[in-house]
Image (cartoon, rainbow, N blue to C red; front, side):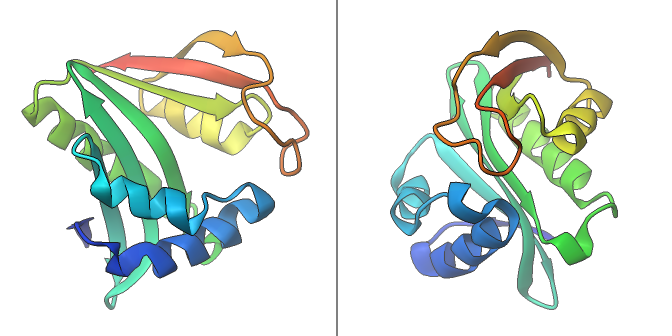
Length: 149
């Protein structure tokens, strides 16, 4: 089930998921809490038996949806959950006037790049040294990817 999270009571669950998925590159609890304080941010979670097993966060500013992060618990990957979250986020953003989706993804995160391409996003550039660390993927570079919503 996909639900919109609206309060900081979920920060610990999101942080645990972030740490599991991204290790030392995970968003901090402070950064996650700030999502709930932003009028531009939306957090959607995929839950199973009321447990958060995946989430997406995005910012909707003017006509642009900026995907900030997508995380899926390793035990629940390859089940279409990330695709469902992205689709729902795009639907919500379109309802709020967004006409374009945009994101950055590590150039060496082949699974994520493939997912975004499958969802209709195209790489339009590379941001050199976009990521401060290169622990997980061995690259600091990120593709900028966009999609017309």
